[in-house]
Length: 122
Length: 432
Image (tube, rainbow over all chains, first blue to last red; front, top):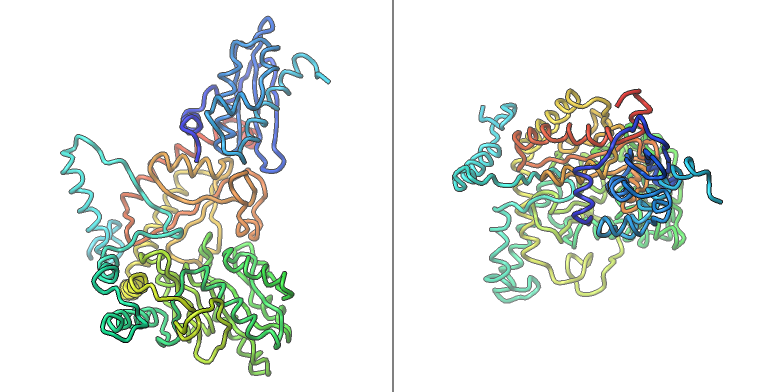
């Protein structure tokens, strides 16, 4: 049902837990299923030097948060802002159609964190 | 005392047998390769076919392949097997053999009971009563009849997951032809007050409402709880073989003598004109054998499942904080446990356990994409968010204490991992 990559992130989530010295924390929630995801960024000179996440949600939400922290580490803020939900889905090999919104949840949290740093882009 | 692994159940040889098999497995591997764990605690979904049942079925695929409607000796051998099986099923619920109809499964039995009664008695009234926690086989059949013009009352249940007899009484009007309430709920295991409801039905009949019938879906109780259709006072009862170590694809509808219903399958005169179609002799034989074994071993199996279930719950409550049970603690079937884990989402729990080789079911009152929300957990008033996850553990005669011990070793770490991930757990408790 889920890809080996999703299951592997469920078993070993990367960079999980609260980040005390984060530059910003972005939050996103899915009002339908109640999933809640926090994304933490530590930024130096316009570059993400560390990322962390917390999530209460289903396995794909956990995997999406986990893989996102890997994708964005060492990216510039501009590069991070260009990431799309499809990039997460691809990094997880695949997600069931009805779980694609889990990638959207993670990207929403990322954009909320970036907005805090850069100011909201309207 | 003949240990059941727990040492709690006398005359229980299942544990001994399973332990023996495991020892043989280990010996054949000479300790070099550990067999991957495969622990099946989802017996309310389906059960393993009993070896004895399989053995009883096999000749009817090949040697005795006759059509039970044929008058030659091939046919008569098949007929004999079908009628022997019918007697065995009847014995399990204290019915008479002609009251037993074989069909394709629990879903078809529910369809035949509900549509068959509604259509047969449509001139007497077009109102049905059911509950909000029924199996989809009942709920969607009722919803279908609603579209066809019947009125349906979906009774709520208490926080403990029980239908209130007074609610049933209040819902009956002079148009009511059928009350269909499940015996044991498939998700939380609660035992509904069918006998008390049948007393209300009897009162209405004595007051002149002759065409009021009572059906129960006993798919999760037949073979687990003693059932006597006369004592329960039901007119129709559904059961299925694959929940009691019989084959899939064969179910039973008990129809009390003199209760008329409209057949839902048109064809030949099979099953006393209640269900057309050539009898599946091997499956019927399997259902009969499964029913016979379930009847003979009923109290032993129930005590075994109860001992394992109670051991699991007792130990988990010690090992994991912030968990709770769903469903009434007294009025529940011995083989089912449904637990809530705060701040751990259900599918994450279920899949993490599966990765460790343990099969259970999950549910919640919220919809999480691939998962439909559980209408049962919604009906007992659980919150509609992912603030908790629910797991159903369901036991059979084949499970052992060692298997439960393995769950006790693995599950606390899984729950702790998911809670560490959760921002809500942090918000609630200050520290993670």
